[in-house]
Each structure stands twice: as structure tokens, then as C-alpha cells.
Length: 264
Image 1 (cartoon, rainbow, N blue to C red):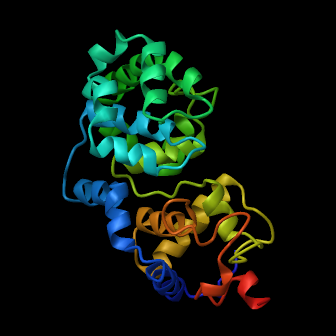
Image 2 (cartoon, helix red, strand yellow):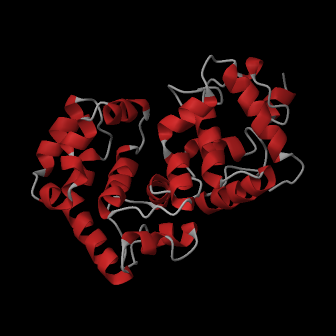
């Protein structure tokens, strides 16, 4: 990873470009609620089992789809209703196909939704087991560095493995319960690569992206989750949609260090 670019300058250039879209970056960060969760944890909040269950489910719902539809149905309470307000006892008794049908009705499904809901009860039982072994889920997610925790719940050989939860979705779950870590999804990995900001000479793997984001956040004197939200919103459809995969809006982008801008 190159050290040639100033992380604080990068954030300011992203902010400048984002505002030109007519959207407010800070408002969109508030909508995601992950920075707020981090701030609550820093202030001493302990997240309940129900909040952890919500964090896991929302991470899975985010899989390979735009987020805005999920956000809209969180704001109006549809998601909470479908998942019994994340009451684990009630949710274990609900038929998985019923959940799938209700989610599809409000257009909140994804490619793995059937598989995700089939294993929901098993995952709840696993979360209950983890909570018993660790004292609470909060103690479990904060017992080690976020990457190691994400590995624990995503690697097949782990005793803590949650089904339908890979490393990337595991980091999303951790962000949902106030842990400051970057989610190394396609947007983040692409923007860090030689195709855009040129911090790597290729598309970085998941762990490389997480490590790079940790370093950049430290340089910019911001939390990893804040940096994650800024870069993700900059790329994501229905939000900034500036640094997208196929048609990036380079003409109006203020990021001078991007390899695409250097060719304009």
C-alpha cells in the first residue's frame, strides 16, 4: 500500500465531490446508523442480544443488493415486524418461507435470501451458545480485534461459525453493533485498487482492504467505520453513486489522486 496520498485530503475531496450531487454526506452517514452505533459503544453502551440478532440479520439482508430499500423498510417498521422485533424466541418459531415471502413482498430479498432464512433458527441457537460461552455477545465481539472476530464467525472450521455469513458480512454485522471496522465489499476493494486510488497494484483481498482502511483511518484521524461509510456512500447506488464500477462520474470528481482523473 502506498503512503504517497494524504488521507485527510482524500476525505475532503470526497466530501467536496459528494456535496455536488445535492446529497448531504453527514445525513447519509446518519441514515446508515453505524457511526452512531460506534459512538454509543464508545460511550459505554452494551448491545443486547436482540440488537446483535438485528445486526446479523441486517448484514445478511445487505448481501449483493442496494441498501436504500432496506433502510426505507427499517424506517417504516416493516423489517422489525417481519422479524418479530428481533425477539429470538418468537423468531425461532416463525416459518422461514413466511419470512422470505414477506421480505420479497416489500422488495427486500436478495440472491441468498432463501438460504439465509432457512438457517436463521440455527444461527439464533449458535448466537445463544456463543453468548453463554462468552458471558454475552457484546463480550464476544469485543474480546479480540475485529478481523479475528469476523474470522471466528465466518470460517467453516470455527466453533463460532454462523451459516450464510462470510468474512465481509461478518464485518458488516460488527459495524451494526458499534465495532469500528471496514467492510471489504466490492466498492471498498475497487476504490482502493490500481483501478482508482492506486493503493494497491491490483484488487486487494478482503484482509488487505481491512488493513488498508485501518491505516487510512488512523492517518485521517477518524474511525474506521466512518471512513468505511464515506467511501461506500461515495460509490453506492442510490447514494453518491460517483465511483461506480462501470460508469464512474470522473468529470465532476475532485479526487486528484485517482488514476482515472489523471487520464482526463
